[in-house]
Length: 145
Image (tube, rainbow, N blue to C red; front, side, top):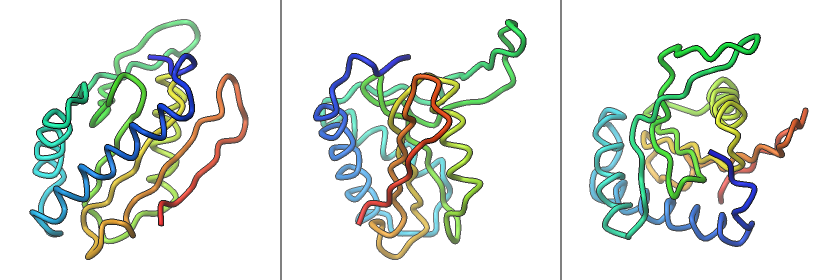
């Protein structure tokens, strides 16, 4: 999966659609459920909006030129270019950011969304992370406000 060919404005439009769908799910369900419930409902909502969604996509790692299946799974990959990691935790912290950034690097993907549904207002639980690939040592993290 590579998003090199996807333009920034297309990525922005896709992430806006994902955030809109996530807000719709959160309005309907509120906080307090398991990640799996939010994931299933978000997949439904995204597909209703005409987006291609892969759920629980395997993510192998390459170590010393050997491809290894370590059991990593991406919650969602939307439109073949945005990774969505779903959480239902009290608050997001740096390990959640590191997890998504690792997934972005391993998948050679540029943009990811970290969505924490355990917030009273979902807008406080959304982070958009960018992997400035190829081979970047620095990645940017931005919170959606």
